[in-house]
Length: 208
Image (cartoon, rainbow, N blue to C red; front, side):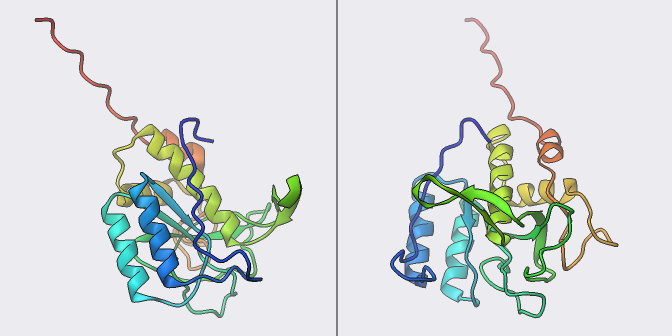
């Protein structure tokens, strides 16, 4: 974990519904609230069709220097690209298992940036319990944590620079450097952080 990083929990979906239904309006308001409260990384573990209004909100957030991470989706290999993962301002994350194999229910596509663990991952549950969970949402959370480490190391990193670091240092899992299944490959937190130059220390002031 990034020791000096805080977490903002933003409720944009209705907890009273079975599937946690939400509206574009509430999602955008959540994005804006996070941006106004200093978020540098936003994790989005939801997926749906393209929405121009949401696309505009994502563009505004990215322009402010916020790194946007989203789950690729769990609709399977025949599904069309889902959003916000397929938005050009978003880093789309797919899921792998303990053997670095692709999660069979994950979406595929040229927009996939990287992969991360997301099959049978132990996570907190209600009433102080734990459970095993599978999905690209779990993988996206892993990548958001890595991005937090990168920004803690160098707060001046831009979203495009963060994307380049993640993809350049990822472990290739396919026959080619980049594939529709894995993107650039499995995120490597150690390599990503090690390859990132720390922020420059302030130059000492000359005595008067």
